[in-house]
Each structure stands twice: as structure tokens, then as C-alpha cells.
Amino acid sequence: MGILPIKILRVFMLVTAMLVAVPEVLAKAPSASAGESQKETISVIIRNQSKDWAQAILTKDASILERIWASDFIYVLPSAGRFNKTEGIADMINNTDQLTASVVSSIDVRVYGGGTVAVDIGDWKRVGHDKDGKPFEWNTRFTNVWVLNEGHWQCVNGQASNIPVAP
Image 1 (spheres, helix red, strand yellow):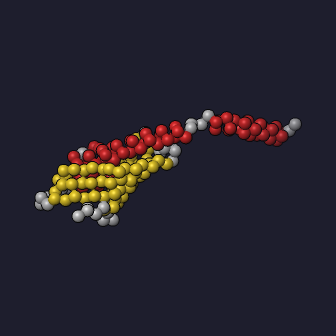
Image 2: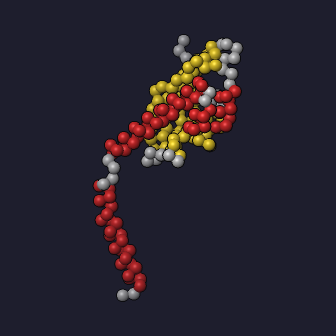
Image 3: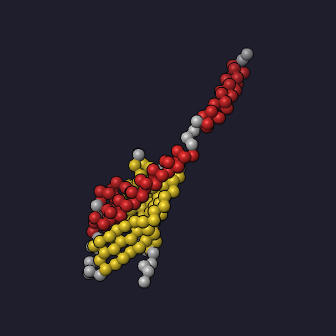
């Protein structure tokens, strides 16, 4: 037997072994409920991160945003303006509005990419007064994209739309 037929025989044996092993490996794969459990765990983490974000804006705690916003973070405002991580943190610190409440609610989370990407959609209500003492209430609906980065969930992109305040 020449070298070529031996190589072909080896490839054939390898392919045959793989075809026999694949059904066995698939049978031992995690069940759908394990995937659902992972999705629920991720959803809890993302909801908590969103709550931390709202708290950071209320207390002007830049360390929270440093942790949860990715280095390439971009956010699109209801006005269509946008800012990056550095600009957003600087604006938060220098903003003269005085918030008395910053609350997120109705957060729905969807998980993709085998548990490495998540999208959350929710509502964010901020109440306070501006530098002249005029009261305000802002209500927005947001969508954020989160990625698992070196074991930590970080937001890479967000967008908000205004929700009119009921009269």
C-alpha cells in the first residue's frame, strides 16, 4: 500500500470516529433548561447594572460608570446627540441639575451569542430641579447593548427616547 492510500484510510477512520462520537456528545450537551437558567442569571446581572447606572447618575458616582461602560461606549440621546464614555462621565460630574430620584423600571433583557451579548429595554425616570430651581421630570425608554468582557458585563451602546409625561 502506498502513502496516499494510508493517508486516505486515516482520514476515513477519523471521519468515521467523529460521526460516531457527535451524537454521543450532543446527547450529553446541556439541556435547554440549563440555557434558560444561564439567561435568567444574566438577566439579573444586567437589571442590576441598569439600576447601578441610574444610582450613579443620582449620586454622581463616576466609579460605577467606569466599571459598567466599556471603553468604546457610545450613547445616543433623545435629541439625537451622542457621547462617549469620557464625555458622559464628565457631563455627569459637571451637570448642575439636582436629581432627587433616578429610577429604572420595566427592564426586559434578551440574551444572545451563547450568553456573551445582552440587550435590555426599560424605562428611566429622573426627577429634580435645574440650576434655577425649576422642577423637572424626565421619562425615557432606553435600549442598551451589553457584552461579556473579560468576565464582566459592560454596556457598549445605548439609546434613549423621550416618553411624554402624562398631564
